[in-house]
Length: 120
Picture 1 (cartoon, rainbow, N blue to C red):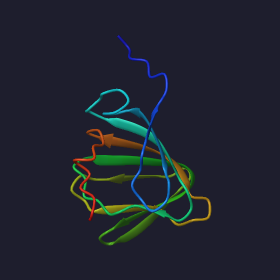
Picture 2: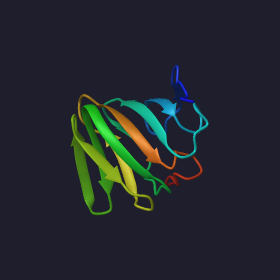
Picture 3: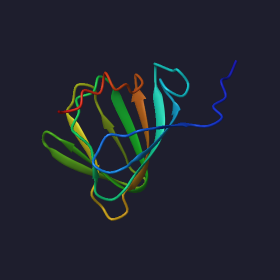
Picture 4: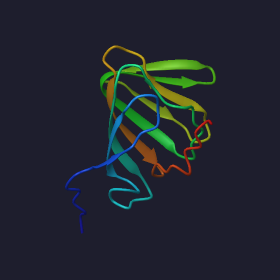
């Protein structure tokens, strides 16, 4: 039987400024461990600690621009573009542009604070 998701759960985000995370599917809202799907809204100047997660992350930028820093440099992902980061790969997300960013993040398996492995 299909499982209807009536509304997302807002989750507190890591980083230097408030970022809105609305989880639709995942460990918190739907008790799903296989995948998480969340809509993010980050203000201009937001940056979070680097991480080496145990999950792949698929990100589709809807508005603005998301910067994905990795060991070899960085990628600016603009509205209408996407990026895939792989488990075990160090990355750091930020929104240095004037618009910030709004994007969808899909994590396989689902995001977990214990498997993201943020830098201290």
